[in-house]
Image (cartoon, rainbow over all chains, first blue to last red):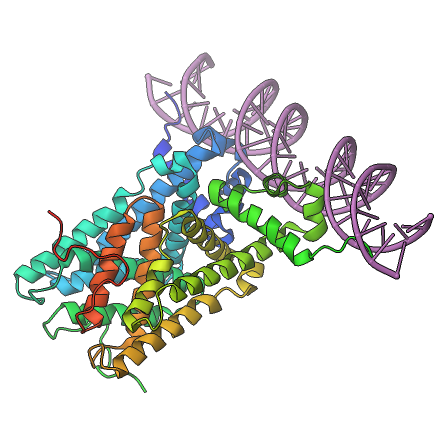
Length: 215
Length: 215
DNA sequence: ACGATGTTGATACGGCGGTACCATAAAGGG
DNA sequence: CCCTTTATGGTACCGCCGTATCAACATCGT
């Protein structure tokens, strides 16, 4: 058997081309030909690995979420050994804010898919919902552990706070995308709530900042 | 001059047809012919009042936001004479949650437009941003007035809280749309934060609820 | 070297969607 | 009564897009 080629690898290359071009021009504008051109490959080959556009879109979504979770994982490990619960929570929340090109396209495309899934049953059947409430559960667990360790107020509702933090991160992410808000202001709002939740006086673990508001 | 017809009225009728069909099948699927059929009118007439599809879409967005702000205004006046600041804030936040068909389609379409505006310059140039931060300013004002009246803690940051509340409302609205969250849980989260912000023991003004969590 | 696998190219079909043109019919005001 | 406005209908152009088909070439394991 000749010319062994890893099909998943090829599919990933093409899916990344899809993500790139969709991130630039919008998911609704991309066609098979655009993806092929962006991948530097013939249209025929895109059809060869993905028989239909629908499958290509599904695979693109899958790849998008996979790459993002990998990135978040790397960022969590990058917080150093034995990070504090607050540092972990903070890294989790800030990782999904659209700050650079990668997070921007992720946020844009993920939201695009989500909106499409409202009126597209095939897309809604895709594993779509379980990703956000996995994040919700993880965050709720982190907060509960922190609470048990005495790092937070004893009266806070960890589940509700987890939902709130993720919701704020998501919505302010979109605000950043449309140019209504700056990443800095979003970070400031999140910090405000982390300061409220975590009673210890530990502050922003990643980048040192001036304690007072800049004049 | 014969056959006087209010052009704006006709345009509104067509725009409402656009909103209806887009709310059902998704904004990206609607064509001129769909809008004409939904409005019970000829394709030719749609072209007659809106020369191009782009103009139709713009007008549709305008009509959507106008109708929504009118609805919110009505809801605010519906809270009775001299509503408490908390009741006003609560009405403002709950009005944008997708609970019935109208709010559902509004949330869906407005988010669709917002996402489109990220990669479409013509749409981004449309008055789009000023609506949300008008809401933010209004909410911040309400909170500040409540604070000056001693209804809230003196240490809360009204601007930050306004941003947070709107962000949570928006993101949880989308969660409701995609079926991840129920309207009730979203309302519960918002109530939680209102309880935190407003120190007076006034509670949910609209529907009475059991104080404890249901078993 | 043979043959299965990967890859390209060109080309075309069918459909749909935005836009356009034209002829025509009601309708109501001057 | 006439003429402008409003509205319909049909029809067609043009371009794009997803999909399909066919021929050809490259490549590499066996």
